[in-house]
Every structure is written in C-alpha cells, then in structure tokens.
Amino acid sequence: MDLYILRHGIAEEVNESGHDRDRMLTEEGIEKTRAAGKALRKLNLQFDAILTSPFARARQTAEIVAEELDATNLLHLVDELSADSSTVRALAGLQKAIRKHVSVLVVGHEPILSELISLLLCGSPKLSITMKKGGFCKLYCARPEPGTARLDWLLSPKHFCRMA
Image (tube, rainbow, N blue to C red):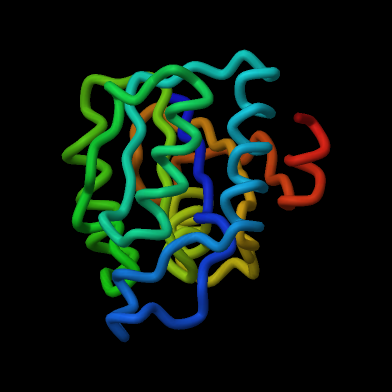
C-alpha cells in the first residue's frame, strides 16, 4: 500500500478557547495548504481514504486538501491521530482504518508522524526524521507493521509547494 503522510499547516499559537485541540490554521497556513492540495492534484495522486486527527488544524488541512482533490467523501477522523495520542496508538488506529485501502493520506501532528514514519521504516521510533508543518512523505508498505516500509520520498513544505 502507498501511505502518504502530511503534517498539518501553520497554525495559530493559541486559540481563544485556550485548548490545543481548537487551534486553527493561520491565513498563511490555509494558503500553503491550498498550494499543497494543488501540488497533489498536479501529481495526479489519488487516495482511497484521507485519515485525519480530529484536532482543528489537522482537520482543516485534510479538508482543504480533500476539496482541492474533489475527495471530501474520503475524509475520516481517527482519534488515535490526535496530538495528545502516542505513536503506538496512532499505528493501531491506522491498522484498523486502512485494512481495505491501497492508497491512504494521513494528516496529523509532530512528533507522532516522524515517530510513525521511523517505526514503519526500521521498527523503532528513534530515526532522526522531522516533519515540518506542511511536510509530505510517501511510504510503501505491504502492510503497516513496524520495520516493513520503504521510504519513497520526503518533501519539505518549500519543495512540496513549489510543485503547485
């Protein structure tokens, strides 16, 4: 399966509610996320599912990308991808959600995404990988199990948005 991983866009530092889960994308974050969606469309990438953290900034990122790809019907909230989750819980949530899919986009948070990439590549969350806000990664894995993935590419937001 092709597993695409996208870190949420630039978000506000603090939300009026004071809760981390409510932090929204900034105007710059929205603009750059739209560019990311356009880049995905230009790359002709298609997904069977778009899985996202329910936290506002990740959900907004997934929604914007899904709109750009005309794929809003593929959006699914996965609680285990929340910023207050863990890498082990995130992997368990993905394994449960992606059983029948061959091309999945996952939208979430750091450090969980970098640790998840590391876990899938080498069986440990200790590789020194950092997903910048708006960063994008493609893995291939026959099944989403520790140590079974191959890294096809990892793009910084700067390189990813230039493709739009």
